[in-house]
Image (cartoon, rainbow, N blue to C red; front, side):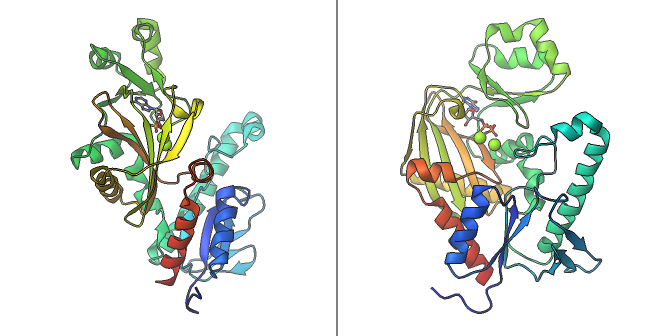
Amino acid sequence: MTPPATARPVFLVGSRDDEHISHLARRIEALGVETLVVDTLAFPGQTRLALTEGLDGITVNGQRLGVPGAVYLRSVYTHPLAFGVDADEDMDADWRTTLVAFREKATLLRGLLGRWEALGVPFYNPESTSWRIQKPLQLALLAQAGLPVPETLWTNDAEAVRRFAAGRRVAYKPVGGGAATRALGPEDLSEDRLAALSAAPVTFQSLLPGEDVRVYVLDGEVIASIRILSQAIDFRQNEERVESFALPPEVAAQCLRATQVLGLRWTGMDLKRDAEGTLRILELNESPMFLGFDARAGTDILGHLARGLVQAARA
Ligand code: ADP
Ligand code: MG
Ligand code: MG
């Protein structure tokens, strides 16, 4: 499997300490294509970036970069709350300056990624699709396309919650992230409890009691489908059995359609069965973790992704 001499390197954007980055780098190099890690967690502390006004005027750690063949975007770590970032001390000392520094970092990194996108480099996934990934838009786009999503309400309006919850089981969870999903109980509908909505909006969703399913899609193909059998409402709290299984063709078609609607080249989707047995789409993640699923379900998402990136870099 010798790649043509024209295969340009694959850039991996994220932290060198993230196993998804290090494992991918190794697999891609084993296929004969160079990789370069742009360590965004170590920027600006250690990673040195220099951009000039030329679209391709990009230097990393003193090395002038050529245009990448493909980019894998794991994380840019542009918020103190981002998974993997530890900004507690800086935030405690001076939260305002710390937030400004994060915003400066984010602006430069978004500009950098945007340059490669403007140069036509294939991205897994491009920043330009991020706006569609916000769940209150994402699920609406999927519903609009006729795909099965749970009935959902994103709100800070207590009255709207009471109406939504009347006569059915409801799950609630954050709009953006940071907490687990829970079942809504009668105590949650009290005046006091609902007053918390004036601090932040919440997602309320028809509660799906069935099995959890994770589907990975890459370049228009389902590359893995896994089911998670658990008693807990949020499977991350209490995994029981994780196994690879064959997706019914109509569900596979829905997953491909959903990926296309959101403009993703690659995704890990969460689905869950409703009381009638229909698999409903909870979300598509734009930078899903996959090593844990490979280890537990015996899938080879890593291999698929490495080959996909190499193929994109050779095209
Ligand atoms: P996140 O972005 O935090 O992963 P998800 O929508 O995927 O958000 O929810 C996390 C998990 O919580 C799901 O995989 C599922 O196990 C559980 N969950 C989420 N929504 C519901 C729901 N409407 N009914 C039952 N369980 C749910
Ligand atoms: Mg999820
Ligand atoms: Mg998610």
